[in-house]
Length: 196
Image 1 (cartoon, rainbow, N blue to C red):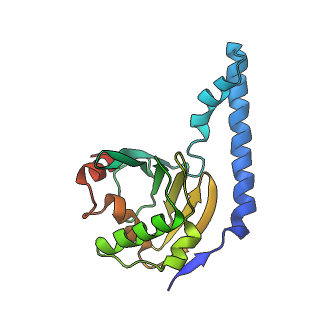
Image 2 (image 1 turned 180 degrees about the horizontal axis):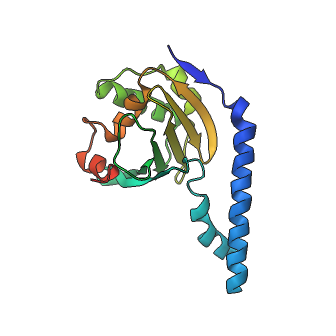
């Protein structure tokens, strides 16, 4: 059975936390800029952006590996895997994957490719209707972060905004298996993502 949990109930709390983190980041950056007597606005973004980049990745997780996925030399996206303390990926541990797109993909394209890949690697997939609640059309530079909570629940956010929580039997392995499973489209990509 699929349980798709609306993000509306938690949205205000998540937004409040995000605003607090952002305000703290700006405060740290302003102290640094005042210390160096830097006046140009663009320096704020250059220096401060890395602090806010992983705002929705749990604080106990660190980057384990990263990889670029390309087809026939055409870059599609960058991926980063986060694990507790940056340790080796373990099936039973919580983990997160970040996908930063290098080009535009429609919602339908992402939904269809996700379902096809889950089935290709031998897993069961929720219906397209469920996936459409989690995915949106993306442009170059857009960033999805998917965080697991146990083996049957994953949270999706796009550019820091939560889009859905999906509950489905063994959904963590089904979704993560696209990127770090035994039958991915590129072993080189998978090994880099796993930090091997």
